[in-house]
Amino acid sequence: MKARVYVTLKKGVLDPQGRAVMGALNSMNFSEVEDVRIGKFMELELKGESRADEEARVRRMCEKLLANTVIENYRIEME
Amino acid sequence: MKARVYVTLKKGVLDPQGRAVMGALNSMNFSEVEDVRIGKFMELELKGESRADEEARVRRMCEKLLANTVIENYRIEME
Image (cartoon, rainbow over all chains, first blue to last red; front, side):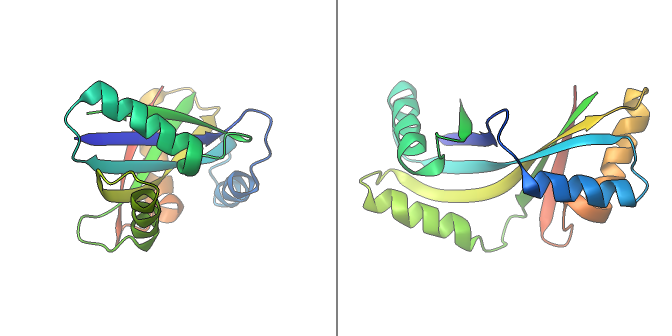
């Protein structure tokens, strides 16, 4: 079973990496770029059987390790 | 207009960050995790008018800056 986890910075949290990428794009004549936010994307290969159980477990993984829930949101997609 | 860019390591490219996360998850009793691959997820805010034009431009941004096409694949979603 595959799980995809998207971790993004919460609205209002400064994203210096995104700022730097935006500056670089603007200086490369991509002046239409008004904002860039950078997050993480993780693909997990799981050997569990039940989709619902695994989704709950991936949620626990996010809360405990994969995301910093103080400043980040996460979204899970099961496949 | 919003563009979402997903950058992932190509198959066969070693992912030490993913390995470390997998090891950490396994040691936290998430033993069902068999593989972890970590990529980047970028949200770009664009002020262009034409969706097709902007998609082509985002593709150029990926080729030039956002992805290292030697070892990474990218996927673009326009919104």
